[in-house]
Image 1 (cartoon, rainbow, N blue to C red):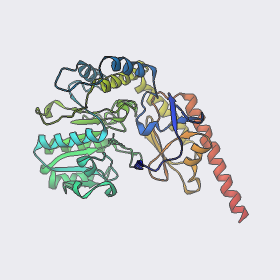
Image 2: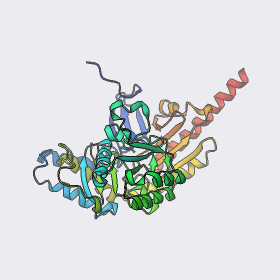
Image 3: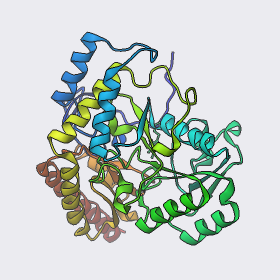
Image 4: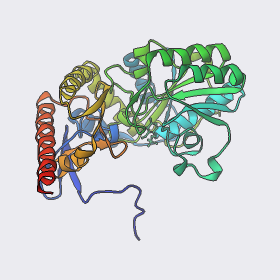
Length: 389
Ligand code: PMP
């Protein structure tokens, strides 16, 4: 049987990983600044995380949600404490799309309404409602087109106010990534998030913060929306939550508590996934990773801003993006092929950095040196070819 090619892939076969280092089947070593698309939060195969999963695996991996699963409560407790959202309820599922699917469904249950406000360049996942709220027509199948989603310009306060003034009474939810990831590392203004809070209160709509990529400590605070000093009604989470073990979830504010039967899943919150997620939170706490992500991020950002050839360096904590001018269009490819550094891309001209939160300063310095070398090499090659013509 042939595999379905989900994504265009390179021919590298990664077989082993530790911290922010990964190795291919030929023994070549790479620096991972992509973290499997923001999934690796505490570093690959972190010993504490491995032990947590291993210990749990010997006891029980899964039993149906029809019995008590105390490890879920343990996870909720820790998550409430570290995120500062102690009074919220936790619903556990298996991915980011599933988290948003449930968040949007719950908003509709809660309000009895159908309309969803999302933003241009958003990405919320590939299941029915999540994809309907994603601004990429190429991945929306005809059956996903509900006609209930409107895409407003990101950070445009006037457009949002105007839309809500005319349609606010029909809006179930406003869903936003505080930093758009797939869309190219676009940061929501704090005043924009504050306006969403105000409008949701005014019109009785549900504020959904999709923190699947920008959350879980990546930006230096547990949730990026926290920078704006606002509380969302629902936070969706996944990616860094399991450090590679599939788990997702939503935090639900007390005033929109779901009724029995509204939400459910077979695998969500299984013992093994909870052990993995607890392992992550324990490491975040023990290694002070919120603070470290902020500090490392500031250092990396400051140094990147000094490199004049990179345009529009932006982001928060360890979620950083920059535009690459045309003459450096091979930068990402060369960083991988010549310097063995994995980075991510958003559009062909945007490089995204989403490393583990405990990336070392030494690794950052190695990256910066490789980056500068490669920029000079590309510029030199360009100049030589211009002279040759
Ligand atoms: N929301 C955001 C902000 C994302 O970046 C992603 C994944 N790129 C998703 C949701 C979907 O997550 P998953 O792939 O786990 O379904």
